[in-house]
Image 1 (cartoon, rainbow, N blue to C red):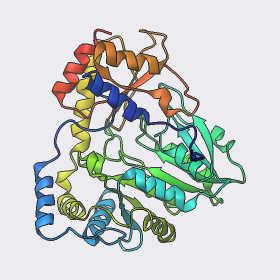
Image 2 (cartoon, rainbow, N blue to C red):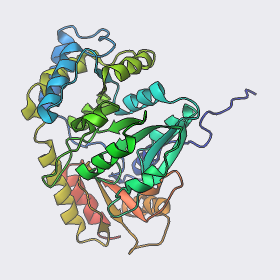
Image 3 (tube, one colour):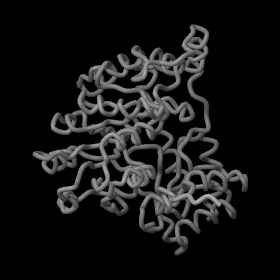
Image 4 (cartoon, rainbow, N blue to C red):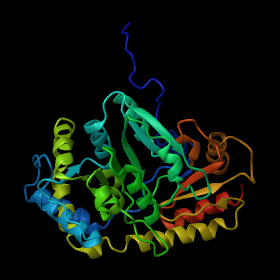
Length: 381
């Protein structure tokens, strides 16, 4: 018998996989995992085919396709009036999660503390623990999931090495304001604390609000890894392509890890994406597209017994079922699948302590017909 000591003994299969598997087994509508059920733009797949025919089938450069990095740099400058050097400050990655893992691996040593805001994307805490780091948690509460920065400061110690931000946030759909960013600037000023800013939903922000990226604030930009995702931008989550923006000093260290992790990522897709996003009209309408879906789904659920929480960004809608049941959110979510045929995610899964506010998360990145059918089922709950 082999004796293997797990490096993540408390970690099991992610809630996303569990709920998607249950959805398939019960033939339920899957509003749990965050992926579209509609195709990406045919122009994009045609560009991939063209790239393959044009010979982009071997290793791309380790930091990424040069044309793509230059196009990213131009996109960032157009959106935020900020310049990143494509040669030394932009790295193309195998999706946002790989970029997050690499950034954390680049910086965190045993004993280093990382502050995260929960409910949080489920890759943060396990990665920190895998590296021997310590997770310092600030728990956010519904309905607005606001941050009290004076309380955050109380989490600081001499071992605090990094703060992870996520705006727009998964799973809550909340966003950070300019006041939030100014408060953060005050906290980290004069320290060596770094920031990992998970901005994979940067384009999915609603109600005429503007995304407050750390890139807009020089005091934060100089200490930040910024993570972005083409999967979210292009309705192609299965392509697993993203990128990391960071100052040259941080990028140099990031690439040391990246080269021994994946080395380089999908070559023809990099070329195709570069061709596609050099035309801003191919992505500028995405906020309007998803805002309409959010509004449509919220209107449908207005006739249900669920209480809908604010959704200011991302493609996730959280809802309280406290008027319906006092079950644990995990039990309620499983019953929704088995008895009503709709799969969701219990938000307690995003808290390390499984904090249960009787909130579940729906993904509305679906065909309107899918959302309508799910809503009809949810009205019966």
